[in-house]
Image 1: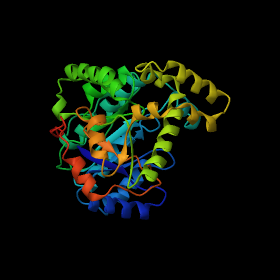
Image 2: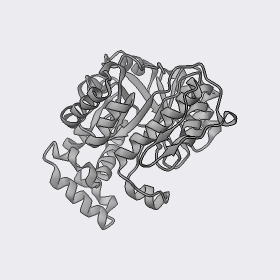
Image 3: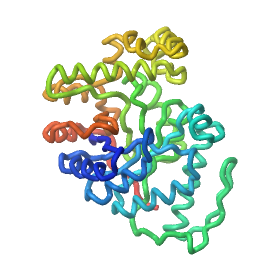
Length: 348
């Protein structure tokens, strides 16, 4: 199992330092987010200070940029990292697209498919010299003069991952992508009963295999050196479960456990702004559905129980404001947990 961590994003000088420290500690993946900061700039900084660790946005918003602009940014990071970059994309919800970015909303899965297809067509144009002529419902791209075409990298294909929660996006991940970022608001039952069957349908449509497809996340990690630190992380998870549980589009996860009433209660509380009271509605038993919980000396067994056999990557969940925390010996233990993923197919 691979171990991922987020790197500090508020200061690019600090980002480079933290990425180097994460690499030295033994982490496999350094990831950025698109919340308060640009997800690509921080990874550019990390390129300058690392040599081994994978670099990926988890995730960058797909609809707020032209897919051609995304292709340029990803290609530059791919080259600058000597092929260590994985492009992670997510749609975000309708309200953020329309009200935070002033981007018109269209059906997400269909549009995401076109974003992926445009990006791949652009990369093949640059890398293989293929003519660029893409025509879809949302995007039409057919101009790439030599002066605007980067030189062939000579590297393998850039893997693409998308964030997916619902069936349509999960099927798209399986058919068109190399990896999926599962939402942390997932339980093992939801992953087994909903996620895996939809991914399998996608694999069959796209002629892909599970062994070359990577599944990241699908829950939270609440760990620390002692019980007090674990308790602090459990409360953080409780708050996140309450927040995500208030979103109706995520209520399918709660339905796997007969918790629809909890979802509606959290939703109604969010409508009246009772954000500070919502976490109290989430019991310890519900928190345990969403997280592997335990001190450093016990967490490996909990990770195996919670994520083993379904997830290939566990994220520390430190957020973009905290430096990586896991000790090297624990990372080494987690990395020995077997998974189904054997590696990306990087052939063009």
